[in-house]
Length: 169
Image (cartoon, rainbow, N blue to C red; front, side):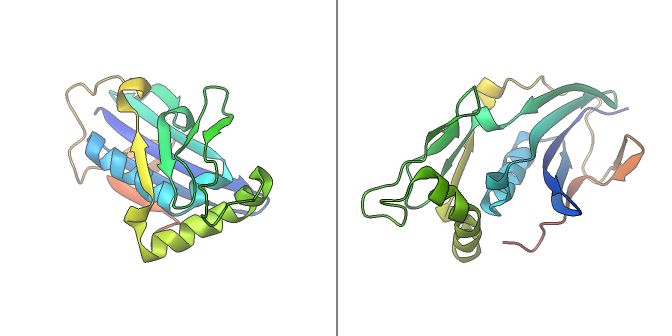
């Protein structure tokens, strides 16, 4: 059985929602998956936003990402959730799109705005993960090789991305 990472960003409400999963064995791939998910705007809606580490095919640890991810959206100062999950940062920049708006008004339009910016210029949304602060346990041999799928809770997942968000950006 292998060691590997799984990133999950998902949101379910009523009869609908989305799911973005990434099975990988490399922090660079994990970082790219988190950035993709944030840039779709889906992260701003809430829901699951976690990384799981598996060793020998068994779940070792699950970590919530919110306190370790910083996002910079044009028009707002860098946004990072605090340990209590209360947002810190994300204030309107003077003269920017959100100048003069209160927090509720910003959050009403932010997911769609992120999506629109991401369609036109994804790199304009800066995403960084504090990997040191997240302190994920290291993968140990044998590490899942690219192209090899896994079974988690009776569900077969391929190496790489499985997402209902593909094509969003």
